[in-house]
Amino acid sequence: MIEIELAIVGAGPAGLSAAIEARRAGVDVLLIDENARPGGQLFKQIHKFFGSRAHKAGIRGMNIGTELLQESEKFGIKTWLNGEVCGIEDGHNLWVVRNREKSEIVRAKKIILATGATENAVTFPGWDLPGVMGAGAAQTMINVNRVLPGKKVIMLGSGNVGVIVAYQLLQAGAEVVAVLEAAPRLGGYGVHTAKVCRAGVPFYVSHTIKRAFGTDHVEAVEIVKLDSSFKQIPGTEHVIEVDTICLATGLTPLTELAWLAGCKFNFVPALGGHLPIHDDKMHSTQNDIFIAGDISGIEEASTAMEEGRLAGINVATELGYITKEEADARSQEIWDNLNTLRSGYFGQKRRDAKDSMLQNGKEVIKWNIH
Image 1 (cartoon, rainbow, N blue to C red):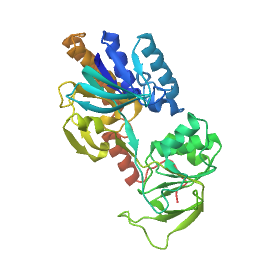
Image 2: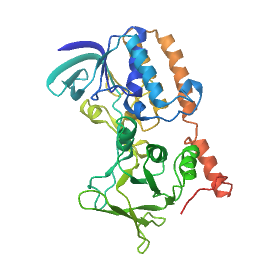
Image 3: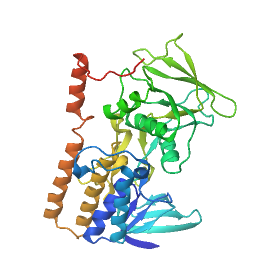
Image 4: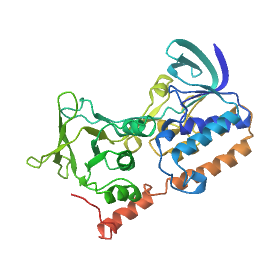
């Protein structure tokens, strides 16, 4: 058995940020990730972040990942890559399989779960054909592995992930034949959507995929229009020749370890589904388990990093490395940052303003919408 003060599961934006804050305070940290490289989603994000300088605005995600890795190395954070956490018991023991061949038990005084999220799938006839994949998988292929997933791609989903990956597929040399959106309006940031639109890619709102055709791979897709109740309208089908279908249809938090640990949950559809309950210190309902990042609700990498910092600081406080007064002051600063991030484009105030603008016919960008 290996004993450690703090074990962090997940070396993405939240996990790395938590590790750095805790280690900076003096905590003995072990960072565990199932992948061969730390950084999570950051290393497939070649676009620049938005927000303020405090939120890494103007810096590409992959460069932010590099900065976090360099900082973690500077503090000498212990890191286990290719380490899959298969179980958790008593709120302190982690069962870890390393390199698919060696099993270890890690006993930690505190645990931070920063396990991230998984892509949602959409089922339709032919959805199991080679060539149907999540948009995140396609993004990993082109930006990390330098492999083009296909030559003619259709994207289902017009949120940030859908339009960003669509544009990056164009940059990589693929033809994006269309972006479909089941809702009656587009969902991503205007700046990302506009770039795809200017490249000549058509957007189909109130449309979805009815079926995919092919023998040993995708060869074509049939799309169909939806009514106001999201039901398919017979007679509106249209077949498009493609070899790749990308699904940008949302994410679901990876919460299995939190369930196993006995954390209490709430169901919040807007944030991805069942989520472990936590307080303003990112403390779960289990005494020594904290959460951070997409496991607490699907948001952006900037938010995940702030939540990771929050968890790391408060773990250090409970372990006696930071005074409560210092932790409260630093936590308030982080909460100010989080509130700023959450009052942006997809915050309630901006959402209400956007709805009002659309209802009053003041939309200033003319999209290529069918």
